[in-house]
Figure 1 (cartoon, rainbow, N blue to C red):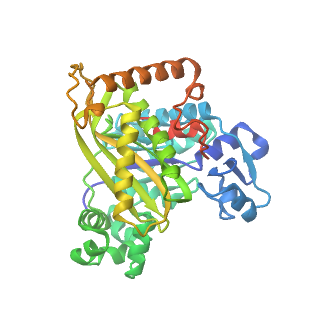
Figure 2 (spheres, one colour; figure 1 turned 45 degrees about the vertical axis):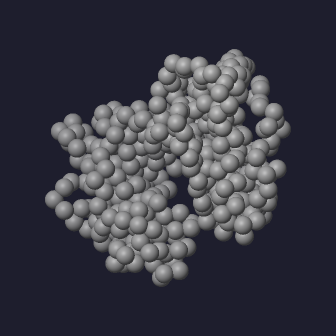
Figure 3 (tube, rainbow, N blue to C red; figure 1 turned 90 degrees about the vertical axis):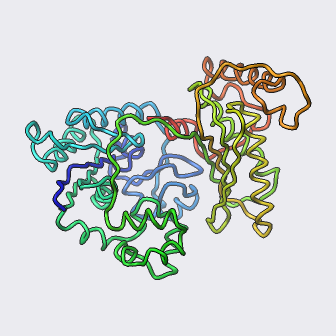
Length: 414
């Protein structure tokens, strides 16, 4: 435990809602939600009534009759998020931004300039409040995992430094859902085994834990429960995969339901791949059922792809396979597509039409070239007139609860 707590995790509080309250002072102190049919973000005043992101607007109004819905100012979210990260960067060059509103930083070696880590955290919070008018919570610890947990415990608008001497005492009293990798499904699986705190998880024999959540997740959670997290701050982030997902609520697991959504997701993923002049060889599709259990299916191709229609067709096949393997599942609550094994686009070599089974998906085949040309035309129109100017016929008119601005912010590589 000799190491010093020098890792900071800074997280802007209720970011989207806080920005709206900053832009319109009449909203301050009032319960507000960004969105409409679906709550995209809620202020702390609204959260006190149980309102949270992803909730339907009708349910939110039932919980909080005084709730006021507001639209989103996406350019302001981007501007203020970047400004907050710049404040952190004034104290150390070791900053790892992980989303629009949160980042890690390592302040080791800066004490002679700015004082101990706690003083740096206080200075960051003070400057973000004074210069940007936004609340920000900061956790300070020896490891990234513990620093992130500390910032969650510090919310709203707080600061928490975890003393290395007492870090396990602090960590083991907390609920398991604060750990990275413990979502609703894993939380429920652990609760069924009588595990609700991180300390209880830490006390479990490795094989018992792996028997509940699987070997890979079990090993990771077991290490994190003892604060064994060797990850360093990475200032340059290169995506290993590109993905998108869409929550469906509770929809029948039928092709007319999932096919348009898969084509919509393929459009988002493939467009981002082409914008970065990259393609990927492995396609993964994830299906979440009504009980929040998820299954994935993937395939690896001989050559990388970035064509929207090809990606959509492959995703359809993967989802059909997943549903065939789970014939008892009648409801789908979420669909996701990701492409990995990314590589820079290479110069294509045209192929002769030999009648191969996978010919329409081979990048050098005539049909693939035609699809690539169509994608290029769509990309050009969107660059000039905006994303809403044109859509593929398979997704035209498809309604989504999350505005495009929010999706672009969430999917953008920071």
